[in-house]
Image 1 (cartoon, protein in one colour):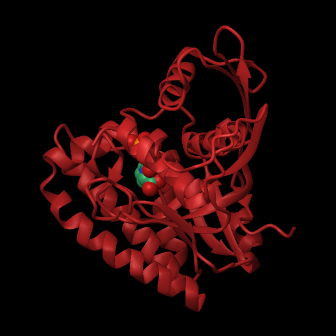
Image 2: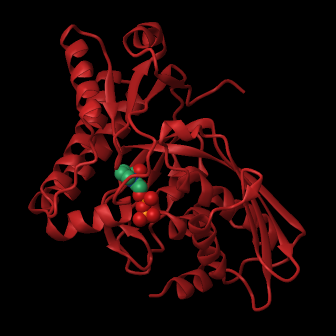
Length: 328
Ligand code: 2P0
């Protein structure tokens, strides 16, 4: 099935009463059970289900309007860089009618120094703004499937707090959507440790394709991910922090192990990444409940509870602490 057919099917029967403007905010998210590998590249369907935590007020705000003669794309108040513009236009092409142009104004409040990807919050904000502009009145579940076409992890950025993105089984992808996990954990903290803010090489799409195609260890991944997904859900429901941290960290290490066994090998770690991992393991030997997760990049995201924030700050003076469940 093509993307276009998928979209036609999803929008069939939806209301189409365009407005004049759409605006939305979407949070960035960090996967605790990672999405790694696609079962269908055209429809961007994942090989495994994933689970994430959204970063509260850190994310992307986007305003979309109709434009007269040409598309106009802005990022943080300035005309957007070429690569960004190209990606947004390719996505808008999926939805535009002939002769229709858009003005898109996007702002990220994720400090670039964190090295956190903004494509997830970016596509999640864009599709919600488009939903309002086009008057589709789609629900978050359907919007998550459309966000997925821009970037897989964007499906999970439709929600605050914990979110799951179901891999689904259907070839048409209609069962691969994200939904919120109805469980708040106000004491949970994420600590971002930046090792490098440079653009990751290669990008995750290429990284996961190469891993899936060449890594023998990848065969073990879907089963581990399925198991970790269930364990994390159980740990969240029971607020069992050691089980939560252990499962998330082990899931990240397993994902990186599949990459190391790819050819050419993929190693996103820098020497400092490894030094930080070893520091976490060392303090855990002394009974301190600190864990980490890592994505397709060199930075660490620490996982800990509110009461340990002071100690984490002492151990890692440069840490940026995020509260994923901010008080309203
Ligand atoms: C995740 N990552 O679950 C995993 C963990 C990176 C490592 O989702 O190809 O930019 O656009 O669907 O969403 C990053 O991949 O990939 C990602 P595409 P995306 O967060």
